[in-house]
Length: 371
Image (cartoon, rainbow, N blue to C red):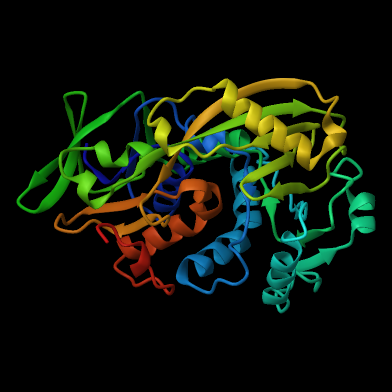
């Protein structure tokens, strides 16, 4: 039976898009090459973070809207499936470990001075060294303070993904795992389905949500969706619950606490690794060293596991969301790099509006495929 929409890829973006379209009345079939939610969506730390407060561009607007949607999104998933994604607005402390970092943080705090949380508190605040020690006793004792971003939240991404798979099925999505899409089925200049392991799947349109593998579907997508894998390596530790209360960060390194005492440390950023999804001694050493620089108080925390994931990077760092040029009926929602979790709800909402023939009220032109 033909579907209204074929979703190619079952990561957080593909699952969220599929569920939104199904709830909106579409017949949806999702094809995932392995198991749903086991690639970049699973490998990350579940951070839901805003853009830099100096930014005002459409991607910033999309990020802010998605962050505002997230608590309700998780609550609806829990109501639908009984699975708690463990949404927590922990806040993020960017540690100031060099004198040069202080004026940069002060500038960010000034740029975000007008931003407020739902309870009226400031979204950004400079934290003194003494206040930092009280807030996070395990953090670096020589820090010159921190920049607090109260709007940063986290989810337990494996639980979110399990909820999304269950939510898709409950909404009527036909979820097909272990089905790798090899090519597009094109009649004239229109996509009317896909080929997957010798079987044709017909649909009125298709949405590419295949992460780092998006450009490899058929012979033509690499030109319009030049998505590449960027390996990130992770370390999992454990401490008693509450040893860390906030996300701690410095540059691209971070620590993320879970409710049960698990603490995730990340991450490397290795575009040169290609599709080699494996850990290296150098990568794990770099992540571990950065973790202890942020929080020396975790030196006694046992290491439980390491893993690697492949984020979908793009040449300009922006995702592809919208119609793919030259092929009617083909859409993209991919290339979200480090922001797939954060942007999943708003990406799904935007795709729903576009597929309904409406114009989205945030400018999506900077994200157009083939740009």
